[in-house]
Image (cartoon, rainbow, N blue to C red; front, side):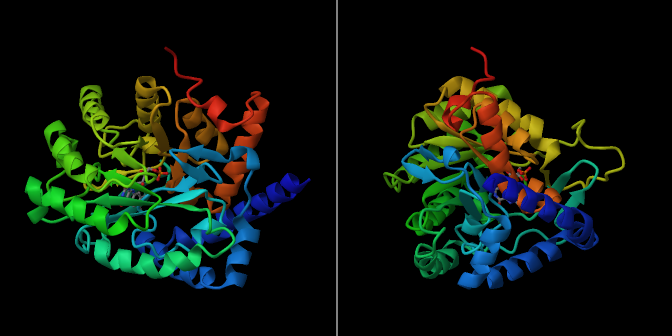
Length: 385
Ligand SMILES: Cc1cc2nc3c(=O)[nH]c(=O)nc-3n(C[C@H](O)[C@H](O)[C@H](O)COP(=O)(O)O)c2cc1C
């Protein structure tokens, strides 16, 4: 009965979003809309009636989807992917809209204005975004300061108390960090400043838009980086590596070999794709020359990498599946390919925030349909030997 009410609420929310709000939002510049939504979210999330309103409008968990992974308790398997809340401004909002976790950032050692505008585009027919932000963020010191004030308050709220906040760290997008030693030091600075506020840390080695490319997708460089980051590892605060969908099988194998020698608890599959020859790019969508592509364009690549990583570890490492999740079926497919947790951004932009609760309810239904008692039983069932 309660589920039926939630389903009805979600359908209504989705109707309003798709037929009214999305039409307005999609007629405006995507970065402007994102900034305005962030401002509005901060205001609504600042008060307890505002948070109650968010919970009533978008909340809704299913107890059977609760999981304990790498020592952390996830109330729901759906999380916000890195890049939506780059400056950790929505910590009051995110625990109240159905997510079980959120990855803040990516945060870099130094503040960074990002690449020149425009740097965010929609590919409407392809159901994707093109992102060229270039790691715009306020920098590790400022964001650590912000979290030191905000998080203790969030932890006192009903949903914030056991919400998992991950922090994604990257190296500052500038010429200086192209020097490997400077780059390593920059990652280490972000890690050191943020580790006290994070439930987990993601090392983002796959930003497609930074000066000098992705130098830490080379095995020697990753070895050096992880040698340094290992020194700051906090037991109980898992470390994940975020992988690019554009690497060859051999490159991925080499990176996983390196990760196996270090304090790495899992992998996030995947970041944006830079490839422009993707058949999922619909005719009529003009793709800018710069930027990484999200959503339905990266979905298949993400699914392939999840299965590949799962085949290697068979559950001994955590896999977070991300890329093109627009429905409970999409999320379930990733789980069956080996993902323990799911993240999203683009699906929420195209389908509205009710998608999160819709996925929670839908996943519970799909697990029951297939005779599974919990997510763990379904993880990797579609991956052969
Ligand atoms: C606007 C935007 C900004 C992003 N910024 C980051 C980032 O700072 N760090 C990162 O690791 N990934 C970033 N990403 C990639 C997402 O975390 C995610 O891996 C990718 O978008 C695929 O998921 P989706 O199809 O659900 O959007 C960004 C994506 C978007 C759409």
